[in-house]
Image (cartoon, rainbow, N blue to C red; front, side):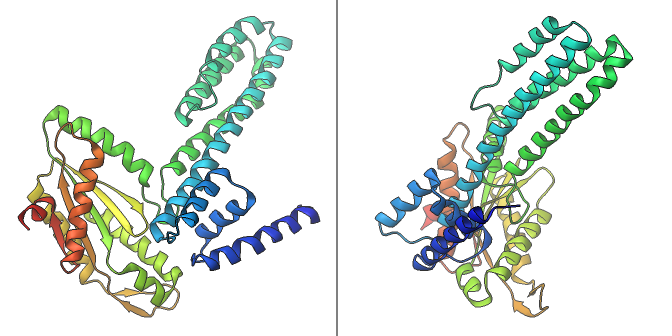
Length: 344
C-alpha cells in the first residue's frame, strides 16, 4: 500500500498537471493526463518537447498530443526493457549457483551463458533479449538431463525464465499496437513500410499508400465529447481493417489519421479500394454505445500515392499526404490521387 507521503506527492502532481492542461486547452482524457502527469513529474524528454512548444507559442493540436503520448509510451518501454535485462541477469546468477551446488557443471554452464549475456547491451531490443532468454532456457534444460533430482531443483528457475520470455513477447506486441484502437501503430507502420518497399522493388511490383483522415473530427469531438470521439476512432479503425485484403496493412498514423499499404496494387486499383471505403463510411449511421443515441454519419477523405522503387520513404508518405489535403481542400468526403495535384 502506498504511504501517505507518496499519496500526497501524487495529489500535488495532479494539482500541477490539471491547471496546465486547462491553460493550454488540452482535453482531459486518460492519454493526455498521463502525459502531463509525467511532465510535471520531471520527465526529461516530455519537458523538452512541451517547453519548446510553449516557448514557440504553438497550439497543442490533437496530432501533437498523440506524439507526446507515443513519446511517453516509448520511454516507458525503454524502462521496462532495462528492468527485464536486470531480471534476466539476476536469474542467471541464481541458476549458476544451483548448477554449481548440484552438478559441478558451473564452468561449462557459465561459459555458454556468458556468451549469451555478452549479446546484451544497454540498448538491446526485445528481439535480442528474447533470443538470449531462449538460449539460456535451452542450456538450463540440458543440464537437467544429468539427473532427475537436478531437474526438479532447476524446474522453478526454468519456469521463471519462461515467464520472462512470455513477458517479452507481450511487451513486443504492445509496443507496436495502438493503445486506443488495437490496430498497429506508427512504429509498426514504419517497419512494415520499409519491408514492403524492399520487397516491392525486388519483385518489380506496385505498392500504394492510402492516407485516411476523418473529416471535421475536432468539431465532432467538441459536439459529442471525447468518449464518443474515441468510439468513432475505434469504429473507423475496425471498418477500414475489414474492407482491406488479407495482404494489405493498415495502422493508426496519429490522431484521427489512418494509413493503408496495398501491395501489388496499381494507382487506379487503389482508388477503387479507397472509393469503396469512403462510400461505406458516408452511408453508415452511427450510434453512441452508452446511450444508443444516433449521432449521424462521419465522412473521410483519402490521399493516395504510388511507390517509386528506391525512393525515400518520407517522400512516398508526403505525396499521399499532399493528395489527402487536396481532397480536403476541394470539398472533403473525397479520394484524391497524387496525379490529381499535378493536373491542377
